[in-house]
Structure formats: structure tokens, C-alpha cells
Amino acid sequence: MSLALSDVKRIANLTRLELTEDQAASTLDQLNVIFSLVEQMCSIDTTGIEPLSHPIAAIRQGLSLRLREDEVTEPNRREDYQAVAPATEDGLYLVSKVIE
Image (tube, rainbow, N blue to C red; front, side, top):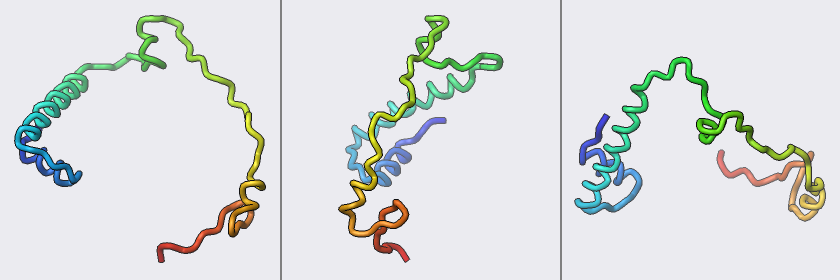
């Protein structure tokens, strides 16, 4: 897949970016390089290859990620926070209806 200059200008318009002709041409070249790389990567047969848990696992076998324990470290202060709220119900903040 490759883009044309008109595609870059359309994308710039949709994102509200003002690009000069030189900037649009440069962006076109950069995007086409990215798309070319993605096409090359998609063409590789990865059948039977296990995904890595981390990129470094490709060079360091047995790498395990050191994740912290999932434990609560802060006290539950919901009641304190909701005490100053204008309106709450069943632990939820009540707000005015905005969309009908």
C-alpha cells in the first residue's frame, strides 16, 4: 500500500493540519517508507513462532518480567472524597443530565 500526495493532503485537512507543499511531500515519503516496512513485516511467515514476552527475551533466554505484587497500598478514602461532593448516591457521584 502506498499513499498519493492527495491522500496526505486529505489526511492533513481531516486533522486540521496546515502543510506546505514541501511538508506534504516529505510526509508522503515518510509514510510510504513506514507502509513499505509494514508490508515487509506482514509478508514474513511466522507460523510456529512463539510471541516474546519482552523484546529482550530474544537475546536473553529465560527472561522473566519483574512485576510488582498487586496489592493495595492506599486506604479507601471514597467517603472522605464524597463528603464534599454536591450529590452522591450508593457511592457514585450524581451529575446533571447533559445529553437528552
